[in-house]
Amino acid sequence: MSTAPRPGMESLTLILLRRPANPPDLTDDESDAVQAAHLAFLDKLRTEGVMGAAGPFREQTDETLRGLCVYRVGLDEARQHAAADPAVQAGILVAEPITWWFREGEIQLDGNMTDKL
Image (cartoon, rainbow, N blue to C red; front, side, top):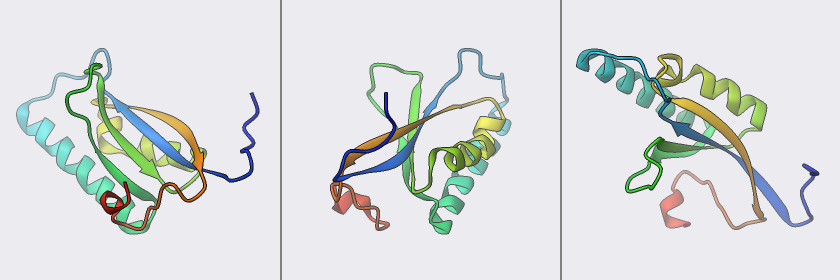
């Protein structure tokens, strides 16, 4: 399968965050600390312009799916950032990178995606 886009297409890198089959057994304090570090990390990436949006899933049929990160950078760089996520490093989440192609101009990441979708 070709990775080259068709004319009129653009892409974003998505990172699906999943709960692993055997997550570590953390205390409530440890879990809270990892979550706080995870959220701070995502905020830092937003501030740096690396990430356009991120958030958790709810009411999904696959409960292992925990959230999604939309990166403004290519797949390799997004993989590196995802690997540095404190929740991924702690083994609470597993990052699955995907390149998503869509029609040019359909998605605008200007810092306020909810007004665009």
